[in-house]
Image (tube, rainbow, N blue to C red; front, side, top):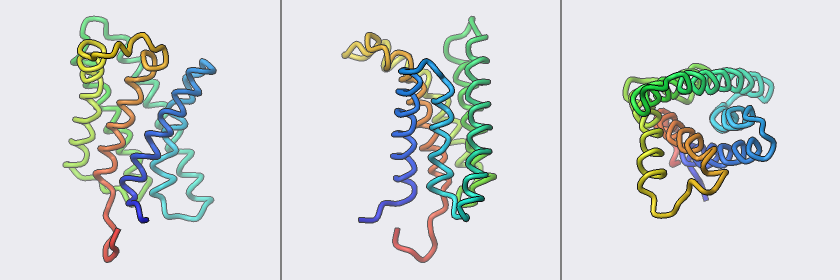
Length: 176
């Protein structure tokens, strides 16, 4: 069974997002969330020798962690608006994530369509979480501590990954 790099990247990043969130939940070290999440895209899509793959992955991990924490700090600083500014900040963070990965991973094509799609998906994650999960959900997920604390982060990371995956170049001449 062949699985395409796009689907493998989405599946891997979702699993890594949940794993990083679970580790952060258990240890109270929030640093695990972006660090473990950032491993997925370069490990699957880099086609370099292992030394270069590790070096580029470490750069992506460091920059993604910085972007992650800066966006959280900026969102916390906006007390007056609950949707617009956080959505804009999360969308810009998604653009920075695809930018870093697109510059360091050659199989990711940075074009306007992919960047706009990543911005849109990243920016709607917060309103979807607030409106769909917290306000409308028939199952009260807010009572589950893990979901309450890390659910929106997992949703943002998954939607950002889908945007990044839309930029992965399809192999030419292969049936994948």
